[in-house]
Image 1: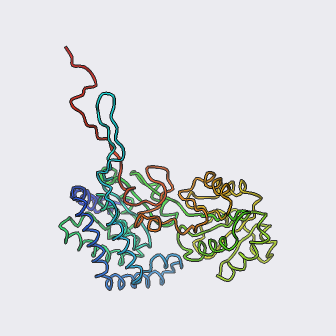
Image 2: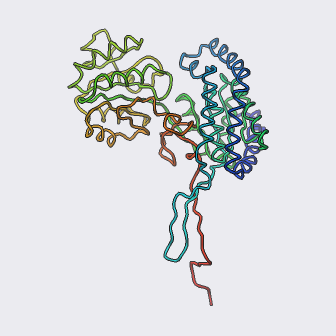
Image 3: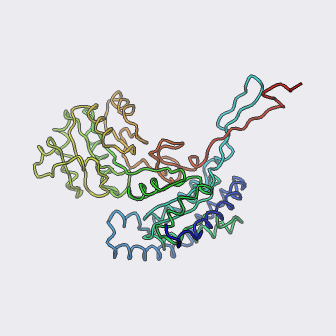
Length: 425
């Protein structure tokens, strides 16, 4: 890190956010609910400015050769802005997590032992071409009594700034400090290094973006990090699968939005159903413009397919490409997932309840779908209102993280003068 980046720019932002967090934590549940409702209103009122800023970001990204997946994540439109506002309202309506007593019991000595939810403190979000994260991360952090330090990517800097302006207007309207939502406007990567060293101020860092960004954060952080490196999501078509259902899961999981982490990347097919399922699956994938890379058995149905390598089975393509393999049985499917999976999302298509249960027990991913699309591994779809990220690290949270996952539990002990030792003398 050069001297130019040790002048305290990010530290100053973090100090102000840390101070503002106390005001958020002390605000009552109704005030924080009203804040999120106001943020939603200001996003809709500021839609014109947000979309104009986003158009500038998109033009620059396209000129710089950004991939289709990046442009898709970056793009906003009226529907997506409404989606951000709706997510904020859904989070606002949720039960307030702060102060919740999750467990309570009385010890033989009369002490009442409680477990109580409190905020984490200051959360740092480090993300790439996802302007919706600016609003949704802020909402989830504030709902849980935290402040948030936002460092978005340079490709979305105008969009993030326009969204942050709306969020700050809401904070002022409710009478809470702007610094509770602090945006690192200078997107130089050196500022990320500075941020990741602030172990005295930042309680948790959450990176969202490509694998290279997440590994950079994990390797340089002196603060705790919640992360997932990539989403290598599998659909296993069991020998007892309903073929029409399985085809629907395949097409939705692969083609509805291929550039996201819960899109399917690998299809595993039980050998006993391959003759009936694979020809139809290959036709359907071809119809949707998907490039298929297959193992030897899959290429037996279409020799024109490119051979699938281990690198393909390990890949998060984030585009219309899928790797396909025929497996002898479920243990072979589970062994493949254990080797190549990323602990993100696994799907089974089957009408056999025992097979479904064996698949659930045999995988350790953050979400397992039985006869449902991989695309449902999303905080909004799972009832969280929004998500601040998907954790595949087994710390205090696993899977999509909502407001509750941005709290921790502490002990509260209530007594009547009990002592651990009798008085001396």
